[in-house]
Length: 121
Image 1 (cartoon, rainbow, N blue to C red):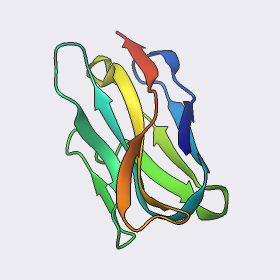
Image 2 (image 1 turned 135 degrees about the horizontal axis):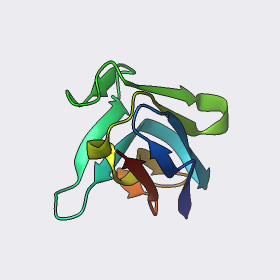
Image 3 (image 1 turned 30 degrees about the vertical axis):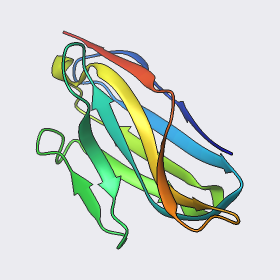
């Protein structure tokens, strides 16, 4: 099976920075894309930043210019550098990967457990 393990969340003051990491492990044949979503209380889960299957990046308008997604393919790891954080960035951040397992025929999306990011005013 597959595990996506996130780390790096926490409490930070407005204007501060955090860096999230997510590593995929297990019987992985190939990873098509990885990225980050978030869900604030009472709201739907929304895209934050992701690598597309073509390798380009896609950001939510609300984080463009403040957040940077990067990856280390050799480590099956994706990062999210979050700068100039705002209270409205407070949410549980979820890592996601679209991948194919060893011996599998199809690609599926997997999710991590989530890591809490809280930004105080």
